[in-house]
Image (cartoon, rainbow, N blue to C red; front, top):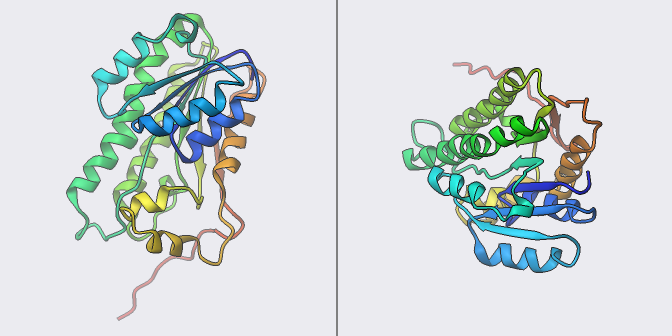
Length: 252
């Protein structure tokens, strides 16, 4: 992919930052959206010598802000060719009866509502131009449950099914939709999940070789680089240190 307008949410760290860097090596224009202005400015300073960059300080949970962000893009950035819906998070690992309702609400507002707000703001223009691609970042948690994954897994299951339904709605157009579902990947994800407890976050990856942000960015780039008549519907990837477990049986 080159010469395209690419919007990446959650671009201030992790998968989003790595994707911004990998797309900056070709002749693209990047729209980098996230809540942390300082991190966006730092990334922009790094990349602007390679490609034009527009930063948007944006909380995807605020629909009015999302609509304004897309509507007010500078002219040269306004026709978005690729939207990477990457903004998302997990909070807590407690069982459902002990989890904080506030954490559940934040995950729903970010992982579901934020994703649909961004998609709805960008998609009509893609359909009108009859070109474009939406890549939604899901998770293996959307297909495979684990203790404490309750609402986080539910939000990522939504991402998978929403992407499939996008494909059915977009049939007859040349707009593509893809869900990429990573497994264990070492970014700020676990630090955020455990609310800054780095010791707890480190335990998640201890003794393993997890996926990296760059691994996921390369997958995003590969999917977007397929010929325009090829739609990759869904990709699930894990480190070789991760797999599914047997059925759980509790015995008295």
